[in-house]
Each structure stands twice: as C-alpha cells, then as structure tokens.
Length: 307
Image 1 (tube, rainbow, N blue to C red):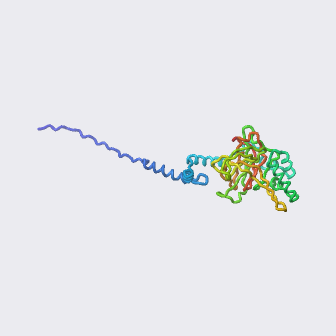
Image 2 (cartoon, rainbow, N blue to C red):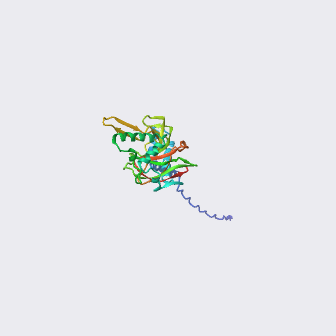
Image 3 (cartoon, rainbow, N blue to C red):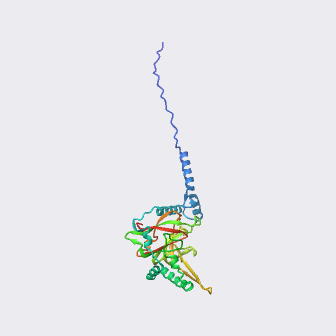
C-alpha cells in the first residue's frame, strides 16, 4: 500500500482590486487645455487674451511682452483706484481756499511767474479779447474756481504752486469724475494735465508725425488715447484760444506742449488718486494747477504719497 503524502492546503490570498486613479494623464492634459482656452477669453483691458496674442503676432511683437504690458497697465489703474494719500495738504473745502478767488487775483498770480509760458499766452489772449469785446475775460471763465467742480477744459490754479517732491514723496491729487459726458470705450478721449511752473524739455512719440521728437512742455499728464506701447507721448499744444476781428482776421494762440502717459480709463462716479507722472524729471519743479479734458472732476484731496 502506497503511502499518501499529506500536503497542507495553502490559503488563497485575496488580492484587493486596484482603484483606478481619477487624475489620469489624459484628464490632467484636458484640464490644462480647458484652462488655457478659458484664459484666452479672459478680458485683459478691453480685449481677450487670445486677441492680444493674435494681434501681437500679426504686428510682429513678442506676445509675452504684450501680455506683461497689459497686466502692468491694469495694475496701475487698480493702484489709482485704491491709493491712499499719506500726507494731506488740503481736503474738501480747503482745496478751494488754495485757488484764486477772482480774476484780478488770478491775473496777478500769472504776472508773477513770468517763466511760465502758459500764463503769458493766456495773458496775451486776455489782452486780445479785451480789445475786441471789452470786459470779456477768458481767465474769468477758465481759471476762477467757482463751486466745487472743475469743468472740462477749465483750469484749477493754485495761489502758491506745490512742489512735486516733498522729501521722498510725490505730489498726488484725489479726484472724483463727476461727468464723463457719456463717453465710453472706444470713444473715451479723456486726459488730465498737471500744469508745470517751469517748462522742461522731453523726448517722446508724436502721434501725427509718427516719430520721436524733443519739445518743450509746460504740462505732464495722463491720457486715454496715448499709445500704450510708449511711456511718453508728446503734444505740441494742449489748449487753443481763437479770436476773430471784425475784418475777419483770425488770431490763434496755442498753449505750450505737453507730455502724457497712457491711462486705462476715467469712469463717471469713480475716484482716482493720481500721482504726478514723470516725477523723476521734476525734482526741482512745481505744479501750478490742473486741467481736465472731456470730463468734469471734483478735487477731493491733495497731498503726497511714496511713489
């Protein structure tokens, strides 16, 4: 009889089924693709990202540089909306006390600063108008600050010009846009000028001549139609006065030039705290006043901030 060998049965090990990973390579790549597509439709300024990339390629520009430039513009716009004045010079009704109260005082201030070519040309226009119309006064209409709103193309001059720099801080003005005359993008043509006491010479891009030129300017400012890809756009004049004699002789007096940097937009009802642009060129200069164009503003506060 053969001996049967006893073999102990082995226990079967239960192998747990492996869970399928939710995030597979295909799903990850699909999510990245969706994110890229959605980011392309995200508005950066007035245009979606995909359109900015397309236009940059068409115009042979670096798309990365274009996107970075647009992001910087938006950051500057947001900063103007949220910036706080650190050292206050005037606020509320105190602002009006800093301005000439009547036309006689305004003319005396203009005569005092003979190095200011804008003042001298306004005085020249005043002489021409008085010769034609008697008591008519451009300075009364455009300079004397009445009420609490600085209207379009009117000046707000200070009795005593304000230094651009105070220690390590730059002059800033907080404004409220009271009226934008219903002009929304792409028809927003706003700009605001800071009138310099002393003129300076700058080099910038001239839109009409389509080249860089060096001119003398009496104002620095922000402009919604200045080319975005240049940090300085120059204009040979920013204000014009015309007078016609009975014999149809027309006298045209132009203000000195100005230099602007691009600003995204000025929306009605919003407040902006604007620092004086190109402040690095204005170490020993002063601001004699401001002038809004194509919008009415209310000056809420004047002071200094760190740039």
